[in-house]
Structure formats: C-alpha cells, structure tokens
Image (cartoon, rainbow, N blue to C red):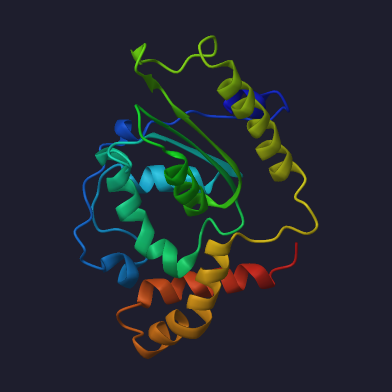
Length: 212
C-alpha cells in the first residue's frame, strides 16, 4: 500500500507501534477530564503523528482473531477520547491483516474505521497444510501485493481529491446517532468529568468558524 500511495507522489511513512513502548490503559478517565492521557510514554507522540497525516493504513497480524498486545494497548488508550472527540472523522483509512490459518478479514474490517473513513482492506491467510506458515512476500503472494498496491493508489487519490459525495460507513452512522442522542447530553450534564472533551469541542467549533 505504501508503494502504491508513493507512486502518486504522496509522502508515506512506515511506523511500528512496538517502537513507542505504550503501556496499557488504566481506565482512570483522566483523558476525558484533561483532554489527553495522563500516562507519559510513547502514546501521545504516536497519536499526534497519526493526526498530522491525511490518511492512515493500519496493518496487523491476527493473534487468535485479535490484534497483538502492542497494538491493542494503543487502541485501548486511543478509543475513549476518540469516541467523544472524533479526531480521525474526516481522514481516509485502509487496513491490512494477516493470519496463519484463521480468517482475518473481519479484523481488517473492524480496524479501518478506527482511523478514518475506510476506502478498502486487504487480508491474507499465510498457512497451508502443504507449506506450513509462510512469510508474506511479493513473489509468493503476487495477488495480495497487487490488491494492496492498487488500494494504496486509491487511498492517496481519496486524500488528494476527496469525492464530492462520500457515504459514511455504517460504523460512522452509529457513532453519529450515539453522539446526537446520548454522548452530547452526557457531557453537558457532567461538565467537570468531561472538561477536556468540552475544551476540544470548543477548539474544533472555533476552528470551523475561522475564515480559510
């Protein structure tokens, strides 16, 4: 996907979650009160890096049908404040997942909406009775490589020239309804608990009113 996006002139960067040493979420809810996580580690730098991008590809192996612990720790730390503030709402995203023998397309489908509006996904099962477990290579899996390459081109195209009409995925419709009928009222009724969320909402509202 990176190669496909780069072929359009897009700037790409490969990031490994493991390099950021992210601790598990403590469930303290301080992110809602302060607008950021209280744990000082690699989480915030990685989150900031993703927020600077126009689009995100999330790639992961499937361990027992779930992301591995390193990625799961990042997702757990990311999810709660994201639910209330929607920082990736208008980004484009894609997902790539692999597994040994179990289907992993469902995991790709669930990961992509966490980082933007999905333009597609690719998954590959790399195990077989004859060969055992294999490494995903361009030569060994040319079809997977071609699908990924073209999806990268499509992702870059959506970022560079957003379509005039782009229907949101059903996950976004669900979240929109949740915001409209529950979360906004919850925040308004508990301003101290959600002080950080309110600050982010005010900042986004002010930014939307500034002249371009």
